[in-house]
Amino acid sequence: MFSKAISYGSVWDYAAPESVVESQRWILSTMQKYGQELVTMLWRILGNEQDVCDAYQDTFLQLAHFEGGQKPEYVKAYVFRVANNVAVSMLRRRIAERNRLPMSVTAGKAISSPVKELDSKYLQENLRDCIAQLPEHLRNVITLRDLAELSYAQIGRILGISAATARVYRCKAVQLLAVWMSKEE
Amino acid sequence: MKMTEMKSNNKCRRIRAWLYTAISRSFGPEANWLHDHIMRCPRCQRRLISCGKVNLALSFMKSQPHGLDLLMRANTQAIAVLKHSLSREPKAQELKRKLPEPKLLERCGKYGHSVANLAACIVILLLMKIGVFSSMDKFHNQGQQVMKQYYARQVGEDLADEVFPKDTKPPSSANSRGFANV
Image (cartoon, rainbow over all chains, first blue to last red; front, side, top):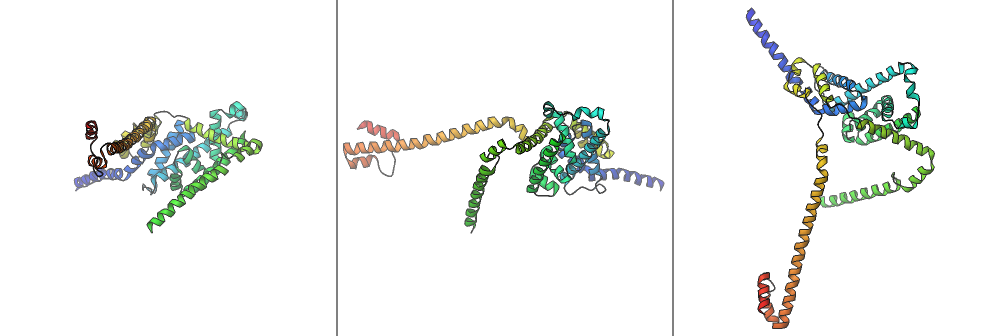
């Protein structure tokens, strides 16, 4: 009796991981399919390799735990939106940490000069700060369009809006960013 | 019914294209009145400069390259937190070694110029071939007419019709022989 129980137990132990693997193999397929695009988008949003790895890990962790391991209906939309949100949260955290630093450390950033205006690093950081402040609907469009380089039709499908609305949002986002970037100088 | 629908669709398309060109010519960024206004308006200049700055910053962001092994590292880190059984999958091992690959369009981009050149050459050759053949045919017909007229003048209309019947065309070699004999 006891030996039988053991044998049943071992069969169950063997079968359970197999079924888990079978039901979650789509996560690896998603990683293979969208990994490169996601990494590119995260890199452009964050500009730091370790942060990219962390955000990527968070994205797939959330995907694996979506409604108890269920596959979302539209996986691409889910991963892109999650990655976007994770990256922006990290960006905001980074900005908050920088703002907590004493003024003497960040004093160099406040000085504005024509040379600095064209400094690529300064411009990028400035834009990242402004993107993090954008309202969610505008931020999603600008990151998906300009940083993930998706088409308006794809963005529309991901965000559940029409391509024309995505265009309008992008235009508004650029206008807002332009105003904020010129104010910060 | 379908034909009329298709015709109206074509008309709509033509009108749309025409409207687009007309509107972009008068109200697009290349419009003269807009250029004149921007040249004189400091407020618009400031706005344009700041929009340009946003676009410049976006281009900087896009052109910044990341490490070649970033995808590999990100995959490895993400797989490490997945279930052990999943991380032992052969696909997972493959992902851990994956390097970024250029898109198909980017890969074919370097051949784009050569493909365009080749296509242009083929088109030119085709046009030349069509042109040469059609003119050869034309020359052949004209030559035959001239010869027929010559025969008609020299030996009479009946004999010329016999040598050059209206329905059939004699081969060029036969013509030349016939001409030589006369």
